Image (cartoon, rainbow, N blue to C red; front, side):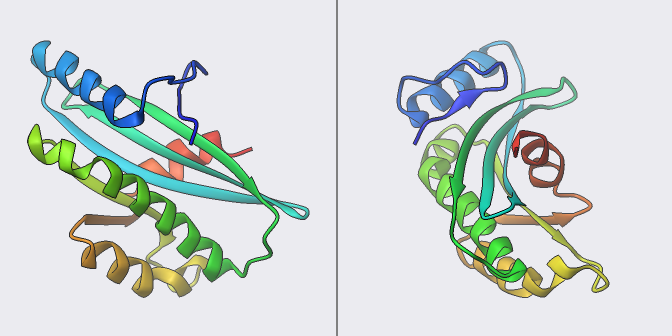
Length: 157
């Protein structure tokens, strides 16, 4: 899996090594960190573009993110696509959660799913929430899910 910085710079070391380096560096500067992970997707004809982001928030001092982008030609309903997004976020969260526990960094998994039943994405809300919570992660949906609905949304093309 290729991860890169917002600048486009590719991360050549394993993701866990890069995240640990960032945590140490930011903590030494005196920042308290929180990590938010989210995924968004966009259908363009037969292709679905998917972007997963890991946002490291410095309390009251902005933040920065790592991005993974991929494409799939798999045909999906909106509900399947929402649950694919959640699965990508959970896989990413699971891959770094032990490291975050070690450094006492809070983690949230954000789902680009609307809590308003008027929206199509709402069909996947209960399953997504159950999936994330059952894995032991803190869950945020729209409008609080900025990692997926704002950050990942900007990276999906």
